[in-house]
Length: 149
Length: 149
DNA sequence: CGAAACCCTAGCGCAGTGCTAGGATAAAGG
DNA sequence: CCTTTATCCTAGCACTGCGCTAGGGTTTCG
Image (cartoon, rainbow over all chains, first blue to last red; front, top):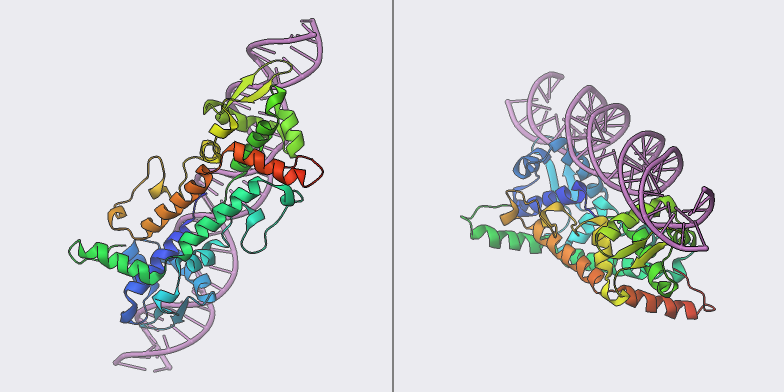
């Protein structure tokens, strides 16, 4: 039941972009530097994010990535699903195309997994990037007006 | 964010034992047969369950495993934690010994992960084996009094 | 004594993770 | 035009854990 670095790094990158939203396109290497991540690896995570319509890219010098929507319209759930796939503690209760076994109809444990899935989704969908930016500001102003993520 | 077969098979085995609780010690191979699992593999899952005090073993012929507590006193959460380890979508919010990085204090995304952890734990801890047995009976009586899991 | 069960350890193929690497392509600035 | 700066695209690779299989050893009942 572990989240991979894809979801974690991706969320941090998206939050970083939301915080620096008014600074024009942001290069991957500058996000990676601030976040202490490999830029070549982070680069790869931007591909699905772009495909999903969460970010837009600008090529060439002074290029980089921009959020494709307002932070308030991007939920954590969207980001995680884009990078980690549909939420599913087990395949038979996947949000997309659950691979139900022949016992599914009578499966009691399956009820548990679907409740777990829903509770995870509920948390992830209840937070927008905007919420995280505000929370970040709140924490940071308590610490010499520095932005930490 | 996937549960491994350890937790899934283990929970099914425990539920199977709860359903056949009044039949004395239950051999691993009979559980495996009913559940369609490899008995040698299931055998290995019994080791941590025994260590955790969830089941007791009886050796020799007519031996097998018995629940060490009443089904109502065994939660799904206990079983899953025993087989999958502490609940933790990421290591820095593990229930046991979170490996906090130096940014933990100011980390906004960490707040999300801790809420995810809590919501998972809340679901898993709210169900006992007794609950599942009853649910199983309810479903099964709708289907010719057969026990499905 | 022998069969039936639990117990213990080792190994192994497979898939996914978390990168690194080498380039190709586009665009802005001189 | 040409260099620089960035995104884009593909490949590969070490490592880890998963999901078993296998070969025994040990206890206990009839």
